[in-house]
Length: 592
Picture 1 (cartoon, rainbow, N blue to C red):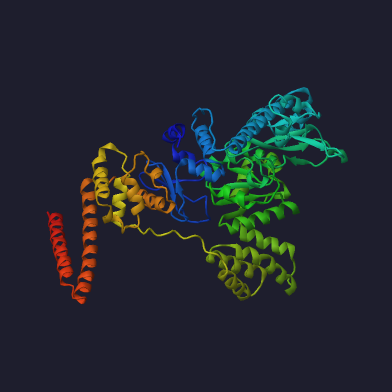
Picture 2 (picture 1 turned 90 degrees about the vertical axis):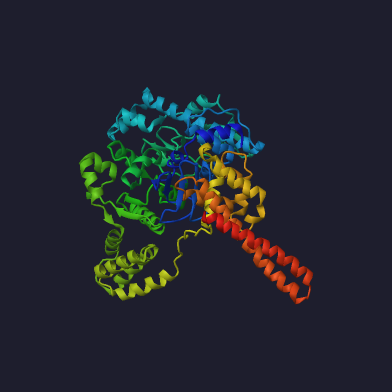
C-alpha cells in the first residue's frame, strides 16, 4: 500500500463511507450491521467495525477495508478506489501511479468523460437562461418548476445547433474522446470513413442523470416539438464507460438519505414525476426512467431499504412496467405497496392539481401488492365463468410463487381464492410444488473458532499502546513455540499477526478464509483482552500441546513394547514422565 493510500485509510471513516452505499444500524458499542450488498439476504449478516475500520459478512464470508469495499461495490481497481475514498473525504490527490498503462488510460478516460459531462451540464444551463431557452423555460414553468428547482436538478436546454456544444468542448478533448462521451453523434460515409462529430441533443430540455456520488454521467432529453420531425419524445444518452442505463436509478444520489430516514423508497416511472414529487418535499423518491427494474437496480436500492411504494402511470405501459418491477422486487424479498391515483393521473399532474397533502394521503393509502394484483386479475379477466377464473389464477400464480416467505405465499393464495371464488386447494397444491423448488437464502456460516483462539487473535490485533503488554505476551509465545499452535484452525492468521509490523492487523493476514476468522473474532470483541486472559489462553494451548504429545507417546510406547524394543520403550516412558510433571506444574500454576 502506498504512503498516500495509507494516509487516506487513516483519515477515512469506513462507517461513513459504507453508509453512502448501504443502510447501517448500530449493533453494539463499536459495531454496525446491515444487509450485505454482495449477496442476497433478508437478515443482516454484514458487520462494520468502527474502531478497527474493517467490514465482514458472516453470510458470504467477504471482508476487507474501506478500499476493498469501494473497489468491489463500484467494480473499480484499487488505485481508483483510493481516489474515490479520497474524494469522499476531501483529501487532495497526488500524481497518480497505476499498475499498468491500460489502467492509467482507463482512469484518465473516466475522469475526462466526467469533466466533459460537467462542462456540458453548465453549457445547457446557460442556454436555458439565454434567449433561445425561452420556449423551454415556458414549458418548465408550466410543469411547476421554479428557478430553485431548475438549479437543484441542473436542468438545461440544448440549442437548435449541430455544433454549439462541440465548439464549447472541442478544446477539452480530441474527437475520439468526444465520441466516447455519448454527447455527440458521427455519420459513417459510404466508403467507411467517419465524418465530423456533431451535437447529439438539439432543441430539447436536458435532464442530467447522476451517479450515486452526484456526478453527471448522462442525460435524458425531451423534445419541445410536435409532429413527424420532432423525433422521439424522450431520448437518453447511449451507453458509455460512465453510463449503463440498467445500472442507474434517477435521483438516488439526492434521495438516499431520505430513503433511510423514512425506511422506504417511492418508485415512480418518469424523471419529471420524480422531480415534481421531490421538489414538493417528498424526497425519498426515485425513478426508473421509463424502464422496468433490472436486477442491478434492485441491488442498488437494497443497500438503502427493502420497502418500496410503486407509483407508475396508470396506462397500459405503466401497468406493465409496474408489474415487471413488482415481480423482480418480490423475488428479491422486498415489501411492496402500490400507490394508485384518482382519475388516472400521473404523480406530476396529480401533485400539481390536487396538492402535496392529497398525494401524501395517497401514499399512506397504498395497497398491498397482493390486493393490487388480485384486483388487476379481476379487471383483466372479468366474469364468473370457470374459464375466466382459471385465467385469473394462472395470471396470479407466478406472482404468488415468487414470494420468498411461505406464510405470505399462503395468505396471498387464500385471499386470491376467496376474492376470485376459486377452490383454494388448487392453489395450495400449486404453491406446495413451487415451494419445493425455491432456493434458500445464504445461511450465516458458523464460526469454527474456539474461545482461546478468539482471545489470541484479539490480543495479537491490539493496536492500543495501553494494552501492548498483552499483545507482546501472545506474540512472544507463538514465536518461541509455534508447534504448540499448529493444531488451531486460525494458526496461519495467528502466526502472521505474531510477526506483524504494520499497524493494521487486517493487512497482514493475506488468506481470505483466515482474514474472515480474524474479522469474526474482532467483531465479537467488547474490550481488548487483559494480560491474565492471554496468560490463561496460552496455558490452555500449552496444556493441549502436552496432552497431544502424551497421547502420541502412549501409542509409541505400546508399539515399542510390541516389538520388544525395551530401550526405546524406556526412553519414551522417561519423556512421558517429564511431560506428566510439566502438566502437573501447569495445573498448579493455574490454581494459584
